[in-house]
Figure 1 (tube, rainbow, N blue to C red):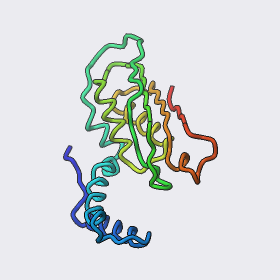
Figure 2 (cartoon, helix red, strand yellow):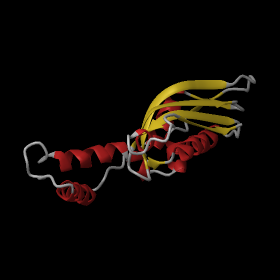
Figure 3 (cartoon, rainbow, N blue to C red):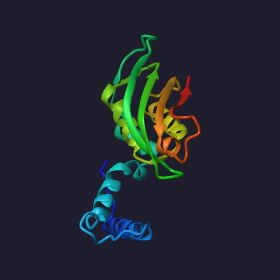
Amino acid sequence: MENRHLSEEQKRTIEESVRNILAALGDDPDREGLVDTPERVARMYDEVFEGMRYTNEEIARMFDRCFEEPSSGEMVLVKNMDAFSYCEHHLALMYNMKISVAYLPKTKVIGLSKVARIADMVCKRLQLQERITSDIAQIMQLVLGTEDVLVHIEGEHSCMTAPEARNGYDNHGFLWGI
């Protein structure tokens, strides 16, 4: 599957929007430190939101090369994969995320690095932490042909840890699966 990038028109729209935000905040988008910021933000968005250009089914097809392996009854676990994403409510960074994925193989196993790449692609969307867990689980189920998938995520959210938003919760965990 081809790598999908933002079109030149989409990049120009992002650049113009960033310039407008900077001006609305009272800064000069043409000053030395900001003049290239709109272009940098557009390039960054092209990369960090790549997952928005693919459905869960398309991501599953990207990583569907598995090994045929008769079930041993043993759980496969990939623990504490580092990840970050962006909250869809505030466009705030979700950071220090640790993602763990476990599954009980039926007839297929997937390379461990592909589990991390699936998690990474899912995180490259405007997200809710709860949806990250269910999206990863759904993709793993599609790839492996098993319902026996568990996803656990812990992380911190800028929208929860910023001084004006603090309410005593700094770390959130979500569990989806078996």
